Image 1 (cartoon, one colour):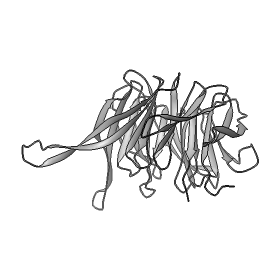
Image 2 (cartoon, helix red, strand yellow; image 1 turned 45 degrees about the vertical axis):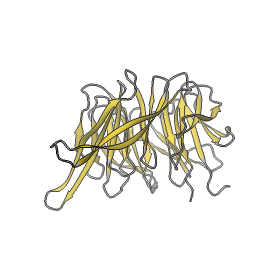
Image 3 (spheres, one colour; image 1 turned 90 degrees about the vertical axis):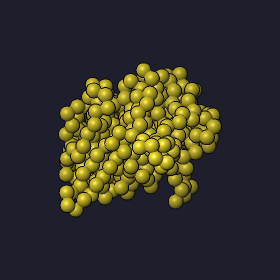
Image 4 (tube, helix red, strand yellow; image 1 turned 120 degrees about the horizontal axis):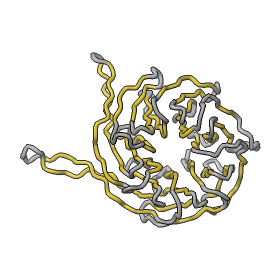
Length: 333
């Protein structure tokens, strides 16, 4: 086996999990998903050995390199559709969200649930803060609320409602842990500074400070938002059959008090609109070097793009029904 294989996995409505040779665009393995549920989201562990598959209402873990097509572990506890799944960097824990209005924190080695966070609405997506010392999860829900949670203390530390009663579909945290981005059903994107103050006098306070907001896919649902590994780029997927690549910048502008000093103002620049798919684009994944993006759609196809040129490099065909999730890990040791 290659010591640093590229693991590219797609899944969706045809109850099959497909693994691909990313260089040859050929399917190397198909795992039948034998439950009646569709597959909603997937995540790969950082060591590439485990694939977590979110369905309804369970999460199944597969051994990527093992000979068996059966899951090595099944996590039961949610009472409805599991909408998101994510490993911690050390792959000892998993976080999941669900339409049952809860977020669960799982011990992968023990195979059991350690914490249940109770939301007051369907949870559409989650993101784990990259610094494990912070013990934070960011969530978004059907009522349009973005929340920051302490998973250890089962506490809602802060929350914002970008637009009342407009569902937030997806949320992401930048690799440095300083920005949170959320996309809603109207195609709007909201970015916040995540401010964490660990003062010994007052204890820890957490705040979501408004940073940037703009129309990313005007009038169309944003299905997924994600940061690139280097933190310079943002990808958005949409019901308008497109994905878009954005560059994060900070431009100097005159200080508001009229002095000669300048302040940095955040800006987002559209790099490319990726138009290949013929139906909703549901999910995407950046390569570790941030040079490439994979998108998947209910048109049954996956596509590999150059981030720099916005051109399609390869297409992946083989699913019989729509693809709604993708997982990619091409990290080198």
